[in-house]
Image 1 (cartoon, rainbow, N blue to C red):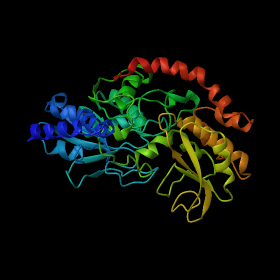
Image 2: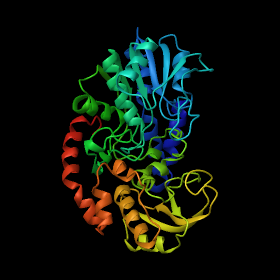
Image 3: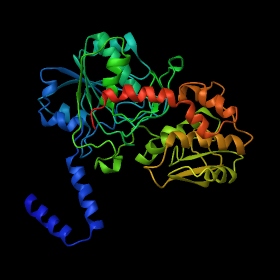
Image 4: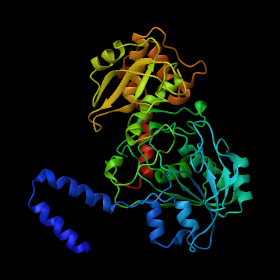
Length: 412
């Protein structure tokens, strides 16, 4: 049946134009990509054989047919899965931003679920010890930005596994916004928080397995026993829609790959008194506040930023900032994602918002410094610097990080 279908496809392609052939080529690429979990399962879970295994995951830990990998592994006699560990938002994804599910027994599998959110060091190591696992597996879809907390859950769990004497296995998944390059400012260690533990760039351009290798050699107190299960068929230049994988929101305010595309820049608005679009159907693509009008979109469009247009927009968030109030602002429309630079765009939007709206203010806790990793962006914007000047301010540190990053890339 498969051969006849391929023969029919070949005949159809031969009879159609080159433009019609492109989707077929894309479909072939999608068939070739396999996630780390798919490659692990294809070996009969050889890397976990004879191990009491616990897994750090969330709703993004799925198979191609959208079954949760915990359900799949629990039902397979070749795996001794004995525990699950939930990050921010929880293992099954029931909690909003800044929340987790706590300790409970999973109704679907009966497995004990332990809460890792905001836990690190010895307290997290004690949780791994109490779970009685000897191998900790990590499988969560990342979005490519330093301040997305799952990569620091990865870091904290690696450090805790080392302290508890556990082996650590990372199952790789694509970076949805490509792995072409690292962009943006590099974190300064004095600004380390759960939205940035170590000095990497704001858009890191790495997969979770690559980050695990980097963390293990460059940042952990001492290396953990680490194994990574790579993807096959992934290209660094590919956006998520080229992978053929289903998208499950990694968190409640990351509904689509389009959100991930802008997030590394527009999340900076969390550090201001403007709405970053939480409570709307297009978080991080809609930005605004009471008193803003069409002048902001006009000022942003005048900059002719590559790959993006800005539309005057009005919206009423259902929760978070300006809940239930109609606010004005902009919606980002990325028309050329290969040219689009989310971090530079985010900086330019901060500058133009400050210029056109007299009510603009940074959050009083200087959260913007924690998001950008230093005082550089805030102080330069306050001093009236241009976007090009701000971007130039982080290039030396970025170049140094890119050199280190290059040593840990798994896909060329």
